[in-house]
Image 1 (cartoon, rainbow, N blue to C red):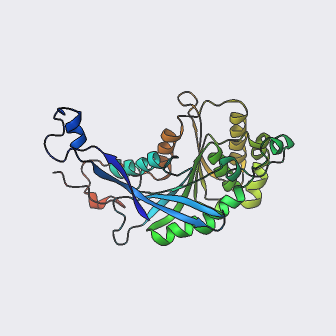
Image 2: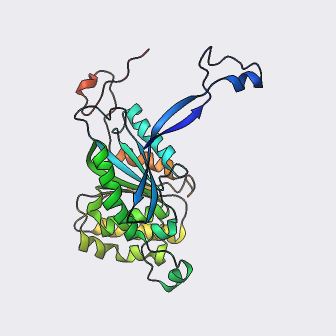
Image 3: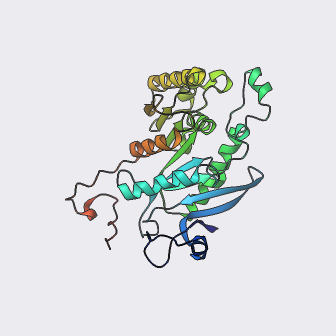
Length: 299
């Protein structure tokens, strides 16, 4: 394990807003390191290689008796989506609009291979011959990643799985096939075009067979349209009609987001829905707000 650090050119003396005289002076100003979180290299027996696991911890982690719900982020390597989603963890701790959460980023490598279930349509099997490894990646999460995190950190009762695009497809696949693995699911612009929308056709039967009572799904879509939107609409209809239902919040962000921009704002929206905190009213003592830690004293 080692700390994640980002270099920032912060002046250690003098006024922070003072002009820098010249390039030579700027080069002589030492940088201070910024703490971001922790990174681990997990030797995976299931995947047969090493995987990067990144962790952002809330400020109150380490306090006796405190437990924190965990958001497992797919595509969570440092060069993937971990850094900006970890920022949402910090935002929750600062804004008090949602709980302090542990953010765990899980690295993916060949996404089409690891995040898709096997295709049944011959066209997809021909076009994507290395696809279909979702069950193996789910075993990696269940048998290696989750036990590692829960042994090492002060984890709470609830686990969420968050992913976008192919990772969103994996989120839906997990909800339908192994719903007990997580409590909460966040599928952002999930690639439900996969296998000619098979999930849309089979969702009702899978929910009936596997049960998903008590699970929650945040489902968001950008302006993709076409078979993506059709698959999402059919999934929504199946979930809504299921007798042992999943609580669902559908966020149509097609008027404001593209496939390239939806992840961050939708993830924020999901955290606010799944783990809300009452806003501070300016009067209630901090210690009376459930789960709250006192705010830092102003300097």
